[in-house]
Image (cartoon, rainbow, N blue to C red; front, side, top):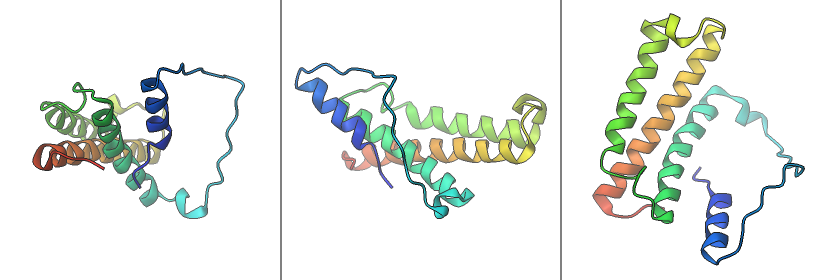
Length: 129
């Protein structure tokens, strides 16, 4: 589920010296299958989104998000989200329904876990997809 093709495309355009232009009137339509509307798919997607972000920043040569301290930061973030929803629901926001808060937290934790896994893989092997 590694994505980031559009980010990689933009990175290559910038490196070739061409400008990137934002067009607010542009529209994109995505056909979404029923299997992508499940909680399991959402959590998996968030994990791979975190993994992809480290991979794309690594390719871009950015050391800030892929640096040595990043797994530690994401571990703290994951624990903070779990604390907010499970043990301190007042800080998680009363306006959102409990199920939505739980899914948001599961997504954030999965994303942080993806960042941690990618950062550790990069540190141990020196490569990323």
